[in-house]
Structures are given as C-alpha cells and as structure tokens.
Image (cartoon, rainbow, N blue to C red; front, side, top):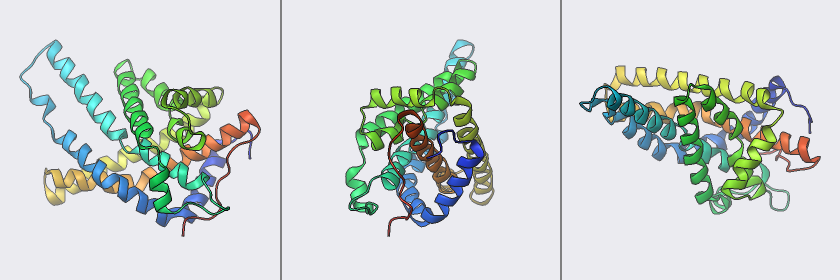
Length: 248
C-alpha cells in the first residue's frame, strides 16, 4: 500500500479498478438509485418555496429547502459507498462475495443512519457560511466504508473517519470534491435535457437523477473506499486489501 497517496495516484487507481468492476458497479447502482432517485425527485418537486412567507419565514423556508435537497441528494450515495466497500474488501476463500452475500452482509441500519447524519451535517454546515459544510463533507466522508470494513458503530465510524482524514484533509478534498462537483453538474445538465424532452415532470427529474448517479456515483464510491483502505494502512501499518477481480 502507498503510505502517502497523491490525488493523481488515487484517480489512476479509481479508473483502473472501475474498468474491472464496471458491470457490477452499474448493476448495484441501478438497484440503489432507482428507488432513491424517486425520493430525491419527489423532494425537488415539492414546492417548498411556494409558502406565502416573508422575512424570517422566507429565510427559514430557504434553509429547510436546502437541508432537504442536500440530505436527499446524498441519500443513497453513502449507502452505495458502504455496499461497494463490502464488495471490494470482503472475501470468502479468497473469492469476492456474491451479490446475494453482499445483500445479507450490508449493515442497512448503520449505513442509513450515517447517510442521514452525513447529509444533515453537510447541509447545516453549508448554511453556516459554506466552509463548515465542506469540512463536514470531507471529514465524515469515510464513515460508510469504515462501517463495512471495520464493523464499527455509527458513532465510532464517524470518529474513525475524522481520525483517518486528519493530516490528509486536502488530499481527500482534492479527490472527492471534484467528483461531487462534476456529478452535480452532470445532474443539472441531465435534468435540463430531461425537462426539454419530457417537460417539468416528476418522471423527468427521476430519470435525470438516476442517470447522473449511474454515471458518477460509482467513481465517488470507489474513491472513498480506496481512500479508506489507503489511510487505514498509513495509520495502522496493516489493513484490508482490495480484490483484484470483480464479482462473477
């Protein structure tokens, strides 16, 4: 393991690993993001800004809208990352687990809890002058892989993520934030195209959300898992290893 991974080295590993695992990653993404995309589309479709308010009420409504959109936007992304961590690091007789084994192994409760806590922390942080939101986005980013790789509780996973990233904040930021920004850009583009083709409908928002997640979330998840593995090795001198071959 590289004890001091650079963003460029991590991006190269993301690309290589993704090419080997692409069919499985896309299948898993479809399973996760078809239902989650519907939840996000319903949230976006809710006319939060239509309330007849002004002054402080308008500010609170805007804050509530941002909180809802960020939480639902991250909903599924964290859960998917945990499932990818199981796929890439858990083995039985030196073979990757099957999709059925992954479904049985994933700690649904803890991943959903982290999903919601992470999304809320980022949203609230963004409301507090942006920088705290970016800090939360980076420092808590590895909690989902930690839950599945090290079988930690929700609280321990969040604390472990912060400790792993300590001293490597800018590296993690340089890897994850561009993927998130590009993914958001693609989502906006896909939404605009879907609206042009299907109009301002729930279906168009749902389709755009699912397609953009299929395109970019596997890269985010792969990056988070690779960073987790690398930083565990850097801190402990030992740790999990990634499978070189995908699920068959």
